[in-house]
Length: 200
Image 1: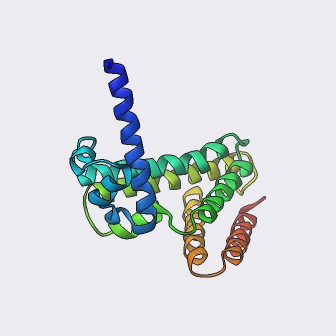
Image 2: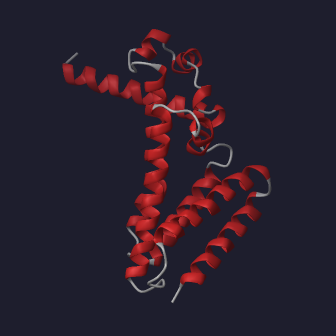
Image 3: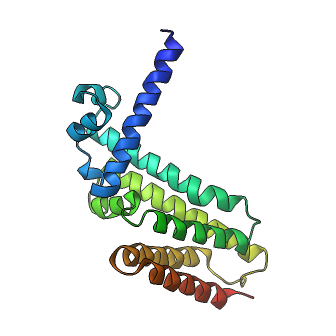
């Protein structure tokens, strides 16, 4: 087997492990990822799984990165294809709300926020970086809407991002605890009121 083929096979195996670990973490959290259960799921030995990751934390970080990439592909990338301004900001919100609906039985990243918000370390820092990226992307879209004259010039994009994030968090919680359709309706109404308050 050529060196390139070996590398490709190794990458494919690593991706398979991460995919299975992601499914486990969506249900049980990143702390619920057991090397033993994961090895059984992918038909490998524990040492075989560890051969692709230096430690359990390295595996958890890789899974968290994978989750962030999935979110970006599902929410942020489609929104970027929309015109700058309110259309893009609304696309971010709609994509995020769709993500909640499609992950109503467990969003790995929101679960990771609860797991690591008060636990210093690499996983905490990785979660903070993901959340900060979303907040920054949302604030940037809000600033574009301000620059386009669709929102008041004195609107604060960081504040808008904060409030949209708060609505999304409430949607995450209510979707899992109460009626998902009603939760979505209330979240959409909240965003409409927020943007209307700052529209020209």
